[in-house]
Image 1 (cartoon, rainbow, N blue to C red):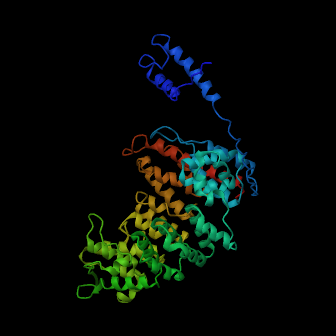
Image 2 (image 1 turned 90 degrees about the horizontal axis):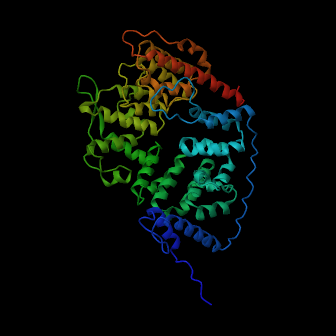
Image 3 (image 1 turned 90 degrees about the vertical axis):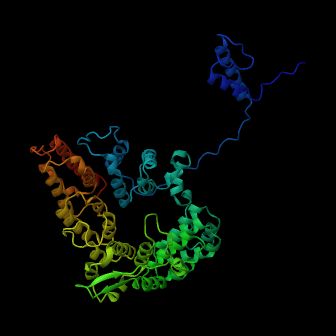
Length: 536
């Protein structure tokens, strides 16, 4: 009996290659060239397909997935569920740069909706979880709130769909519950055997509850950790940072990794009573003095001439960035790491406001004040922040100390919400909106009444002046999300198309009318959303 010859090992690949190149250029083995070649190729492919399927060995049946975890949170009200479906169905328009019209941008309202729903403790409707995860996949800023709202079912779904794998990475242990603090054996086992993300989540969770326990857990394996892991673990100590952490951080100053040393030094400098802060105070104090020989007391600066090993050990980076002088680079690092409380005694008993008002010789003013700004933010010193911000109505928009909008925004973050809003409102009243966008970004939501009125008044002034409305589109977008919905009534008079003056931009009136109509519509929608979620 003749042996039946089997197919060549690469028969399927030959057929695919012929199909891609075309039978006019390449015919598979056993097929004659000519007009019948394509049909013969398809016949051969059909036979090979059956042969390949027939040769498959039966696989073991996959295990059925476990049922989805139960969500014990109260269900979302029906009206709020319908609203969520509408928000998730909205997609950014495909037009580039055209008018937005008067319709609200629903996707931009989703973060606020999620924050409110999470604050009320509602469970996500199961049928909307796929759309919610798709939205979070496309916008990383949505992920924390979206995953908190989705709950444990998000990780259950993520195991079934690779597109939602981010939910596994963002959830401690990929959805596995962390051991309780009382389960010391479980904590130790996860810390010693868990994946990196699980260990970071475990350390962060313990640090939030028991800072000392987290630090002691980290110390047990610190010497054997990789440098990049040590850096991430050390960063978790920012939560609950206190004087008890100083011995551990002092040891980290001798770490093999420069980044670990720098982070340890930064954390120690945020503790004004630490030994490192005292050492930096001595170094910085030696560089700054008051000269009384001039017409008025003047701050003089003598920057360090070298970066010695002690400075490097305490986190001073010796190599200056490109285009930056070494001495000014070293000087700035010393001042920002020194406790702000040493300067009144060093500079004649003056208050922070009096110190900031002193002239600084030889163009060292910006360098010195910028370093003080960083110190005020790092040490959360509201008194120095106020001094460096200056009065918002000062003729110089930059204030006496801050040299950039970014610095001012960071200084404002050290103040309470009400004071922050009041300062920005006064700044807008004096300088308008062109400089205020970054400052508005650090204000609490919804904006306090004085700040909301200042923004609306400034927009109205720009509208009456015939300015280009698209120049204020960023502020208008912030107003849609941050203005108190109760302000909608005050804005109705601004929805009409204004008369265009001689110097007005062509068509500006129509754009402004649309923008204010959209603002009012969005504010009313936000009020309705809050009511649907049970917010009185």
